[in-house]
Image (cartoon, rainbow, N blue to C red; front, side, top):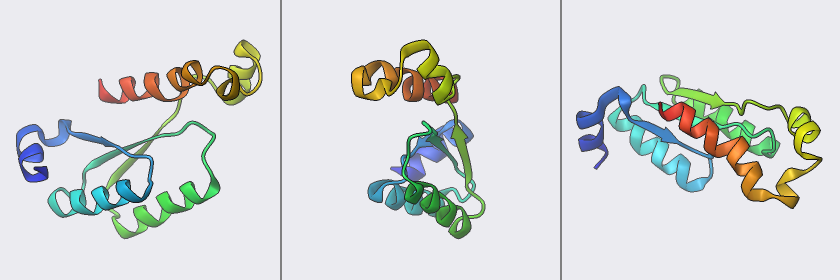
Length: 109
């Protein structure tokens, strides 16, 4: 499937990854098909430090991968100023729209 996808779509194909266990497995498979594949990480500003450490280890193991950290248009402070503190607790859908959905849509353009 990965061979077909990359031969069909080439550099237009983007893998959005949260760097969990399943994501790392897919990165390993992708790197065997396209060592310089584009990987998008939705940088919400709310990840655990272990997630960032994992990204660093992946980048070291697969140096040709193009890992892009896609940031939302608002910092956490700006989001709090506009929508109140800890929006993810009160309105998780709105928070995900701001911090994940819109940045992903931008990355896929």
